[in-house]
Length: 187
Image (cartoon, rainbow, N blue to C red; front, side):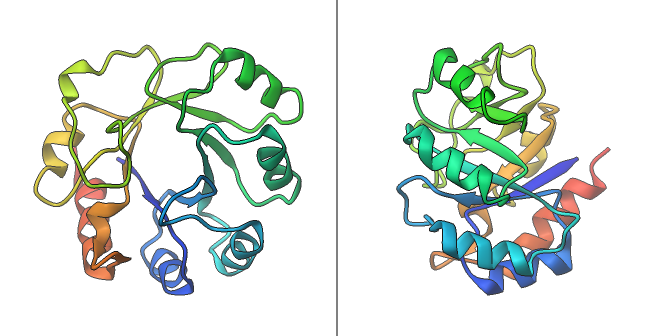
């Protein structure tokens, strides 16, 4: 099963990821305690293993920010985590062919869906019974070592974890390693 470590913001997070080799990492450009600037993201990317794909996370941001991040060749996928509608996504498609992940609902213009708690990044699990999609989906929202097995039974395209791999607000190598191992061992 694929896994994404989201909310990376320190060189240590990159070192952990380079050793563990998740499929994706997420840089949060939206307002958040995990937010990074374009300059910080460029530095983090320069140290990241080139085989790990970077997802840029945005939430109702000005399209010019997304365009700037894309034009700086920082990310491989765009994640929209707000109320962005199909018209907004079509405007992004005018300047990039990067895959788009749309949170909370399917969009005919997005490549993937993402299901998460309405208040992302707080480690809160939502009702997984409401998941309905025709697209491959990323599953987030309070996933941790205690519920990872149940999460994987939903057959997401990718497990997306942030707070579940943190200790005292920072990424924790042991938690990252354990969740990655569980995803890789899942059958």
